[in-house]
Length: 85
Image 1 (cartoon, rainbow, N blue to C red):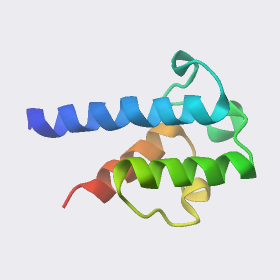
Image 2: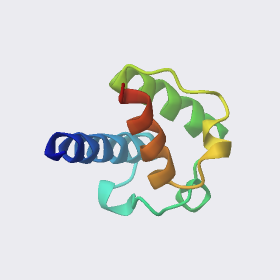
Image 3: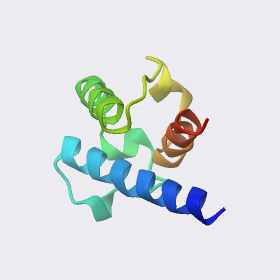
């Protein structure tokens, strides 16, 4: 299982980097338990995040993902699940 853990850690780092880039903040400010609301993610940010995550990970996200996921950690789990065969 070390490969799965390493893969999840990579996805987490990449996702946090994408969120930080879209929000224009330092990656250290984006914690897995942070809610989208607390990060100030709005409808424009949602669109930008969706595009960047889909492009970066080669997956297609449902339009409802930000309603289904309450925090970055939930979002991370969904991405990992999408990437796992």
